[in-house]
Image 1 (cartoon, rainbow, N blue to C red):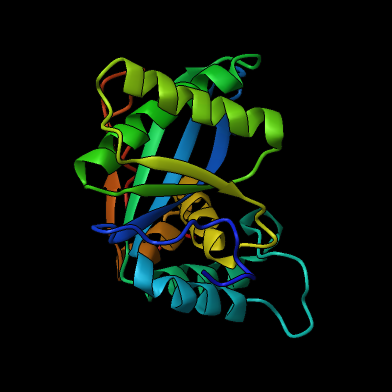
Image 2: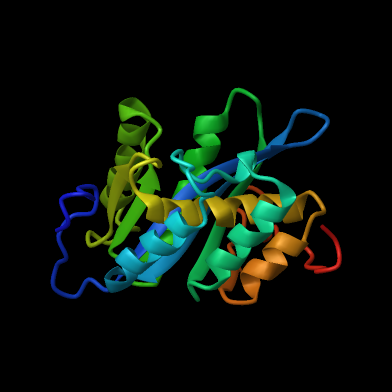
Length: 220
């Protein structure tokens, strides 16, 4: 294992892919919202190349992590191009009708949907951007609960890493940002991601339908 990236545990027999995961939220005028988790699935052996490609998206001299929310429209387009170039599977899980004080419940529900899909794809590792020790433990507890219920196999592991340290996680931030933008009417970024990636929007556990945004590359 590369000592510079201690958050990904050593490979195990049969392990082939890893899901890089991040979150985003969107609210309407009434205060209700949608919680989404994005996942970019890549072969484990491609992680060094993913890190390098994501690092190359930073501006010269930029030290902080790439963050969709902080980027200009032009930079977001470049980031979407960078994600498309990975030729990855991009999966989005959602939970709609999120109340202002129920964000963590919405995350648990979206997390359940995502983890079950990753297990069906035989993904053995899901790496999330850390939100701090307490909230990271909540993710692990959700995973343990799904295992106890018998609906999640034991081979899937959840790990967390600081977004500033694990550059590969920026791919998931781009996926979440591009999807969120498309839900708000700026479809061009999501369309650009889909030029190179296979995108799947899972059925929302709250309403029973997938929140698949329309894709019109002419709008941005």
